[in-house]
Image 1: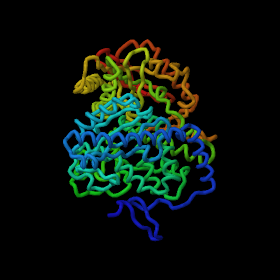
Image 2: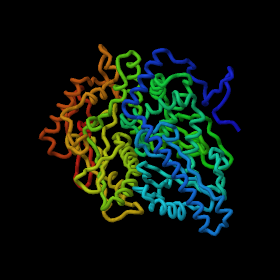
Image 3: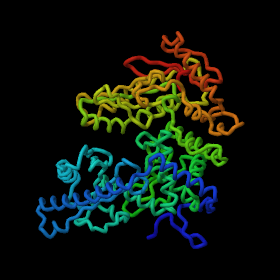
Length: 588
């Protein structure tokens, strides 16, 4: 059976993908020069690990493979197998994710999969005996088993290298050393957790089969896009943005559409294609295979839940799944804005009027909104905090969804993909969400958003954690931009004024071209002038509203802002513990 999505062109070359390429054009001299500049830039910002670190990772993987082989022989002997079967007993380590794709950076963790035989159970043997073996090794630190996760995992550091270890229990008595896990038959008679655990390796291997020029173009382009996503605050699958596999699939599709292009052109085409993409049309590297095992695959025609996916990016290995089911309307809006910004900057770069620094400017999250939700979590000790943190992070997306649903999409949330910690408070983490009223919608005088019940409902669902312990607390509060805690900022120092990055982020990248107008086109709204003077004017106007005597009243009723200040003016109630209502001039 051939690889899905692989066909022959008339000239005898293989065509990768479900459609013909958009262009077969090769690189120009300018593309070669700019690609060289991009590679130097990526090296300069530290995206490549040293040779010493690369050797260290290889040694860790080799040692880990030895450990699981010893482990499976030990449990085989303990279960009464004869010496012949004990000798044949085997387990094997596979890698996936950024390491397997060859785009990992310094300090990145290694996503690994242990494949074991049918008599090596997940709960008793993997999370029991193997965990015990690892805990007794000096090389292993920060061992944290998570058996109740959607995909059960053991997290630890081995000689300082972070490792995420999954387990797949196959229906085989003996695991051959040359096992090919890409075969569909590997999924026969296994449980759902094994299917999910195998999925990462199977998807990664299939991606590498379905992209042209892996080393020359795909890896460099993917490194670039991962760096861009992290700098622009849209790198987090759990928060509803793009994770590593999502970006790999998006980049792989661009490589299929422009098989002879260099990374310089592929980055530009990435933004152009996905700016014009008509979501929820799915991004696919190959046709969806029904398979012969009856496992559910992504199919909105048959599965009602699949119809509600907003930004489907489909994995290429059976069973094909949507890798971006966490995306919400708010996070899709943010990503669409970022695709548009990237496309415009690339156009300016093609005219040599901008550089890579412009594209990779950090998104000024704490300067971009007037109001935020702050979610604080605490516990009594480090182990409890680790468990509590993982649970809360897995539920934060629900808060975004609830706010969208309960306000009929009128109040939009922008979750920050990172986490923060107040070092003066023991065992503390916090998260932030920017709030803004949906732009382009007429404002009704006196209209309010009351999300107090929404917040309480979210807190109730979080506190239903089955492993909850005393001291595991969560607090959700409204905080204005001027009151963002100092520990959020680098070095604990609050910026004195809106940064240059902020003003540039708020305007179209076309404004970087001398002589062109400075305008931003918010989704669904009219173009609004937001040059440097406008940003200062907006900031002064906001601060004046902050200091207005009317602020002492709740709710606040303010007249609509001037055209220079693109603000919302709808009051919002956020917390039942302390009634916090802010008018629409404060939302964004």
